[in-house]
Length: 320
Image (cartoon, rainbow, N blue to C red; front, top):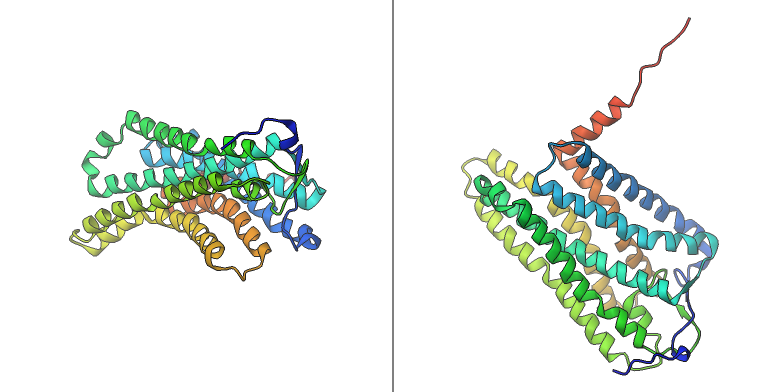
């Protein structure tokens, strides 16, 4: 693939339409997105503050939860303000460098979150199948190695998209993107040149992304095998509740992506604005629901949040 470096081949700006066909109701559409974004910010910041302030929450589970909340904050902040700028202020234009940066960050944060969910499945496996060796297996060095592997692997996997997009020629200086944020294949499809390399690369990334559920499934096969060997039903329910939050987060993360993938492959009669709405919701729903799921289902976090709320309530003194 020849990389064109001339200025004639690189657009000055991209024009993000938002949600094609629904431009007249952008203001109404922005309201739920704004609300969900605020929920994501408040929820994930609360999780991070609770874990930071409470020195007893230093188990590997909470370490992975800190990473998950950080990624959720970064993912939603990378995409939602851009959407709201389009919906509220008609800020449709984005320069080439900013668009490529947004594209890379969205894909990178999504892949990191998928990797963190795999690591959390391993955490559940060790907690149920080898509880006596939990702290011996998931040491600080192991946790750091897992984190570095996820980050380095993700960067190496997603970094080529910057080169591929930078090498593509475009016929116009201002390219219209029928989307509300910059996405790899959405940009590549607007190029004047053959995008076979970008298409193959996109399939490789999707294939790697779809492989993540495999180790998760294997972990839960061993978990279920260990759970059903427990003598009492109470013990089984208690063991399963340990993984309840993780299972809920997995559903929130993978079900929208599966729906989006199937709709793109087989839903040719589905209007384009539905595809765009689903893609937008995929970036905001998991970051907003993840802290709620872990905050409600994790006893330690729920108790700390209630303590913080009650502690901040000062008694009212009445003067007569």
